[in-house]
Amino acid sequence: MTLSITVNGKRHRVDASPETPLLYVLRNDLGLNGAKYGCGLGQCGACTVQLDGKAVFSCITPISAVGDRPVRTVEGLGTVERMSPLQQAFRDEQAAQCGYCIAGMIMRAQALLDADPHPDEASIRAHMQTNLCRCGTHMRILRAIRRVAGIANNGAAA
Amino acid sequence: MLGRLRQIGRGRAVLAALLMGIAGALFALALSWRPAIAPITPPSPGSFTPEQVARGAVLAKIGDCAVCHTRDNGRPLAGGRPLATPFGTLYSDNLTPDPETGIGTWSAAAFRRAMKDGVSRTGEHLYPALPYEHFTHVRDADLDALYAFLMMRRPVHEAAPANRLIFPLGFRPLLAGWKLLFLHHGETPTDSSRSAEWNRGAYLVEGLGHCGGCHTPRNLAGGEIRSQAYAGGIAEGWRAPPLNAANPAARKWTQEALVTYLRTGISPDHSAAAGPMGPVVDSLSQVPESEVRAIAAYIVSKMGGSPSGPVAPLPDHAEAAASRFPEGAVLFAGACAGCHGQGAPMMGQGRPLLSLATALRDTEPNSAAQAILQGIEPPVAGRGPKMPGFADALTDRQIAAVLGYARARYTDRPDWKKLPAAVAKARKEGTQP
Image (spheres, chains in turn cyan, blue):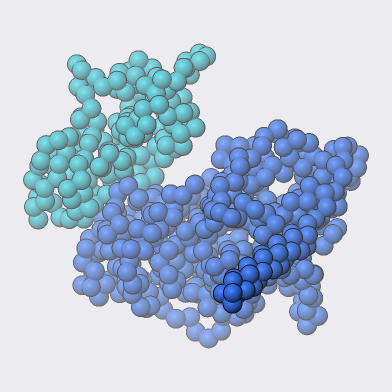
């Protein structure tokens, strides 16, 4: 069936069965390959995008559940030439190793920063708890988020 | 003249009523008065035997002290956790032996009085968020062991924030009236026709374990309704299911199954511990198995003993449910079936079918709604079942559709009524402090 969804401010009409995960539509139908397929079970966070400003696992969000709520992906934040402050911070802190989890990490962190531009350390850690990085760059990811949140990063880089 | 006399008469009557009222209030206040117990210098380590402290540690786990008396990211037992009640927000007290902000100056007698009568060392009535209507049944030797354990913790200097209660509940002498109605002293009676294990279970469940605190419904004054003991209650927006004959489990609980559940957070023929039951399992995973076996023996007997007769087949009415709840069926296929569907990787690990989930079979949808909204955290040291929450992915109406579908598909029970409103309420209750 034909459904219409709004992604990064643009309205799209897609042909998909209603239970199709949002992730598949983003990647296969709209060519937005930032969000990644990790576990397909909502356990790793690689597929995280924003739905109505909140971070959600797009692998377990059926396309028919989206409705009129706007979707935002990492492609909606910035470009290689003009990065968003958070993307720039991830680059400056060299937060990506293999990079597979990073789009999800950025979109989850951005949802927190949009709701509260200056979250404290405990809020950042609690909020990011659902997203995993199997390379183990969590400490650099936290440094990048702190940089945008205005929290001083002390000590040597992890 | 007559009118003036009447006026004087009325004036006198009002005055007399006022005086009697004041006298009554003073009398009540006098009745509610409790003396302070003299402060002590914190006891030295030599005051207690290592065995006593070790026993106190086990009892503290069974009583779940640290669950309420530890705030998020806080030091264990240092208090400060906000507890949302229908009467406002209470903050748990610091149970470490800090002389200023904790219980460092409390004698063993002061500690026993707090547990049995709900009165602080200084003579203040304590709020029944501290379940002293259960703790009053604990034997003195056990209270002394608990005291020894607490006094041997490292002191943490941290005062709890002030309570925020609705008027006039900030006035603690009123609690004396509450206690007249709901605090019943005395030991848990021994039943000589039952095993020692069962009686041990009764002692732990009715006393320190305070299982009825969540699993027994409460009246408008916040007291447990004794005539409906273990008929099911509410905890932090989740349903604490009935632990009596009305327990909705698809497979009757056995002692073995309940021991497994209480120590690991999941039983293969029941479902996973979720919400406020998670911390209970975490505590019980750390106490000697014999204590958990005793608790299970007692609870299983309340639910009506062991199963008998042939095992009924588990319902799975996929087509009928899909025709009645088409939107729920679609959402279930996209959001839930990846784990809960036939042949899903999780099912290959031997996780229970949804037909076995107590939350779907309960008379109320609260726990099923909370599980979808908040997800399930692995209760024991980060291991065990984990379900992602859907609060931000699905709307109340969509969650209601999934609940309607799952209930119709996996149970033979009647539809839940007014589901969207129930989900909206569950969402509100789940996000309170």
